[in-house]
Length: 202
Length: 294
Ligand SMILES: [Zn+2]
Image (cartoon, rainbow over all chains, first blue to last red; front, side, top):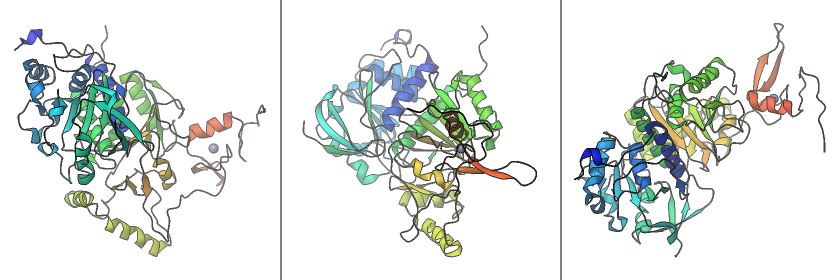
């Protein structure tokens, strides 16, 4: 494991970088399917994209248990960097994590291994952060719902082929469910649980 | 160097993170009230500490902030909050609805249409629309969980039976995205239709009750009503005495000590913008300005 002193840095300006990153995530969540750009520059451990690192520095802390997929776990720097910069506990039990980070979402386990919240407290749920290969290529999906004026289209590659079908659980269980943030480098796209998805070939 | 003794936008980063996470959950579950650990703010609760905390968590140095209270930019409350963020965050402030990127409001939605680059932050005193029916939090939470809103409909229908119309003219309940019944804060029901399919993001903060909720842009928002008694926007049946607007919400103001009164736009920016464009009402004090045509 890398000594602490050699871990990549966090944000250069913690306060303003966290603010601008949050607004990008908020805009993404408020406009599902739209591609938002994270402008803040953060150091990131190998295996973690700059967008993922910026989101972690902005939203994670000791109150948010984080679960890592096999790809992220295989990089010892990731857990060390997260603990050092955010104080978030990295835990093995995915069913109680606030955030789950995926270096390789093609190995996404069944969604019911994560927290959906309860009908009384649907906010007690997991947000899945998935690093993908690209936006604008790959599987095409049509989105509808709050935040979308009519319909929106999204193309993503690097996801399990059936992810969008599996996310139908959000329609079945609403208001319980999982919120998803896709990351490619400094670009992000959100699919909150309120979004309804329909496959469009591709 | 004279570093300020408070953080950017006053709140510490730990509190902002917690509020930001609550805002994201609120957006993902439109109309659901997300609990959050409300902080003490350097102002009394009646001054909208919930809205102030939401604004503090989202505000950045590039934002242009507008603060309104009952439609006016110039009440003590609005001026104090505007100054507070001018001082703690150094943001630009404005009274213009069109120029603002973040608008914090108490009791009104601006008359000018909002656009997609804007966030409207509501100060909410009592976020629970079912509270007057059911004082127990565990029960209202269960009713929301099950979408069990029959009692709310019964109460509204009793109003009709008793008064011939629904008596609630402020904080008139809405249903968001066909799921949650939500309190729109004490805005006049005249403003309810502006919440529906609004291009701007709407965030609601209740400080004392520790709740944050949201309506994402372009979300279906319906005022509760009945087939035989459809929802009706109430408005005084007169144009604004200062700008002649026939489509704005009016306040009755006393003009002298002899009982003189007139009806004027409650949205002062809307009224002043119209007057500056040459629109006049029956009581306009200023001389009519020549308006260039063509
Ligand atoms: Zn007027």
